[in-house]
Image (cartoon, rainbow over all chains, first blue to last red; front, side):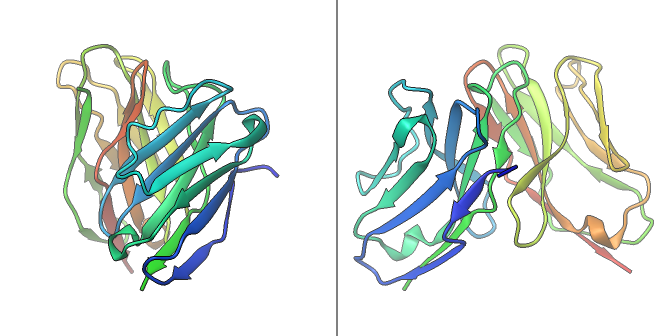
Length: 116
Length: 110
């Protein structure tokens, strides 16, 4: 596709369940980012992938959060044992390479997660 | 570390009013600066950017000038439309990361 796609667009789950969120970056983009946007808040960086290098996990809020990127393309963000405070919009972005020198990040539409 | 501070919202304007959303930054190097826009129910889209001091980014009638002396990148538009209602994010990228401001919600009333 032409842009970054994410699925599902909406997810409602019960507290304690695990969820998986998927991101398909723009073809050829080596850098992929996950952010969390809570209601009325800015973007909170979660994790970053660059090619086949080890990911930058410095933004993950707890060990319940993990992410992988298979084959340098599709990425999955997994939240285990979800809590109500995990409710947010999860945004994925990709860029040609790691941000620096004016590289633009292109965002997907996001996955709206609601934990009941 | 590097950071971005932008004007708190929400901002409510009438159609055809002049818009300014302030953004200032703190950086040790020479970052690139961006404005992203998020329309209701959508992801963020790049609105404009500037990669060096005194550059002016412009798109869809919006403008912002990279001011190194005041460490600012204020967003302006001379005449807003209802369709400009959205959340606007100022951001900077250095050699490592992109940092976003908290976002400013703009509502334009007819």
